[in-house]
Length: 387
Image (cartoon, helix red, strand yellow):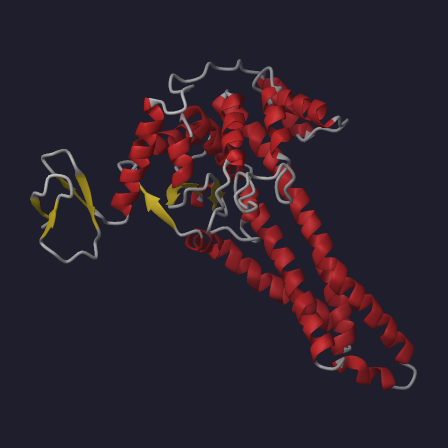
């Protein structure tokens, strides 16, 4: 599609189809190099993610370490936190040795261990399956097509049909009109068709990542329950945009004050993903493939035949029991502890100082505060804030 668009644009605007192909490939090549070498850094920067270590959140670090071992990755991914109450996560990095996993503070506070393990397993699967690189390259291809179409539209409609003078040449008028007509059709359709292909690829990789997460955790219910919580949240992720949306576990866009829609462009229907996971009777790729076909009423599954053959040789593992942290109460001690743990971590990452008063009050002092002392709002004591 990119080459066809470049061909007709070059034929009309430059009078040379080869010239159009060269320009299209050049734009795509430059963007691909930037995405390959700097894509992960740009995505993390746009998301305002901050890197953390083991001591910042031992629970999250331990879960990522578990999923790293289960997935067979050689290198521990870097872990990032996005200060946002929305529930979501994404993975980035062009290969497993450059991988990073980012989760929102809202996700960390709301999910129990099994649920968080399911989400991290899903993101680690994207790294293991090279989905991050695949989707980055697809996004660059789509972006190139959109840029070329946008440029052509500007030239056609804002420069008085600049190529029209070519049609006055002897014997070329009819051919130029045909080229112009085809070019306009391509300008309109190419970005739309490319985006449909992009979304189709994204959806397929999401299903495969769900299947891999079930294999890594041996507990499909963990991811299914996490998807329910993420989908039910009405909070919009502030740092998300159309370009980065496919990278997240669930489509990050919400209608104002509403939960996620079951029908999203970049991801499969959430309820369908949950239904497939809960239909699994064992832990194998073949079992997920069977559940997928039954849920969708489809003859073809999602897993490649070669992967199913290897899966058959390995055999299916039994589902494990839920962890002790699987709470049922709306405000269980685990939920309160997770919220407090996440809140304390975000204060530390923002360089706030903690001042403890003998009356039991805990004060947070902004790094911009220049005074030497503060007064406790409860007991009135004057407390030193010197480092």
